[in-house]
Length: 401
Image 1 (cartoon, helix red, strand yellow):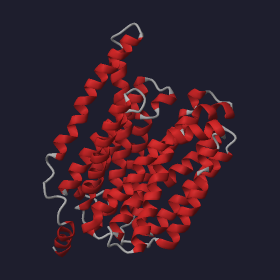
Image 2: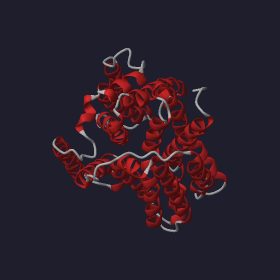
Image 3: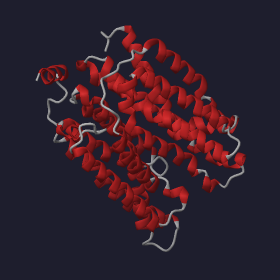
Image 4: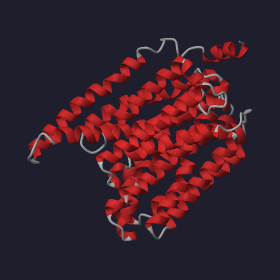
């Protein structure tokens, strides 16, 4: 990327900055939940809704992000995403009740839902195709640093200041990012079809209900029957969308996306990768195992994030990018749920809860996870060995046809 113009390098820094903001928020809030509960006079059991409100909003807004970027322009949407995320952070810090905090987190979620997919789309627009993979690796690295810094930074802010500062810290950073976006980022637009409202509603319902069932069940106290009902509703909504998209030229996500081999394989890989990342967790493993797994996941994530989108034609880039973000969102929730199910399944086989029993339960869980973690290798094996080469040439050939 050394031969890129200075303006393009600055634009990549802006996108990387947005990735970092969004990923940092996913972990920094968790450490402050007990302090928030005490300050707001709420039970700690209710505070999980602070996470769920954000996740649900992201799930609902993700399907529309690509269409909005094409219609209004990547700069305008990326700027709006940073502004909404920053305003949401301010309102979170000013919240005096749990309901106010939940509304502010929802506003944050609207910005967070657009920041990452529109950032990826921006890279596809501003960087020559032969340098796309290197550019995507560059902008995704800060997104992997954010979750590492989040718990430590959140703990420091809560310990030496107050929980409000985990949100206030976003404000000066967001202002700088918004100004830089307006000044430096080009506003690429693309001719769009009329918005597929029916498809959006089906996807929004499917994403929201599945996310609530998989990720929100820990804090809502739903019965197993209610969770099963939510999963059924979510799956039905997504199946109805597939039927809706089959013969609809205005579909939000065209089924033509899956004709691109690297995209289809990439979606399979990201599902497995994000599930296993969620399964691994951060609390019950030795630091050395975490270090090794972190290196492996970093390599797989960078490869997946670049290869998945590189072969998509330009007219499908936005919708494919949004669909990739949706799959990431759902697969993380699925991974957390599977981890809980495995622990519950093996734990139910033991009556006592002494340290030896706990170690045995985790051992069986890890053995089960080892099989799941190996699955992405079979997906990668189907990717052609020359996929990384001649990106620009393949693009030009496809455009000429």
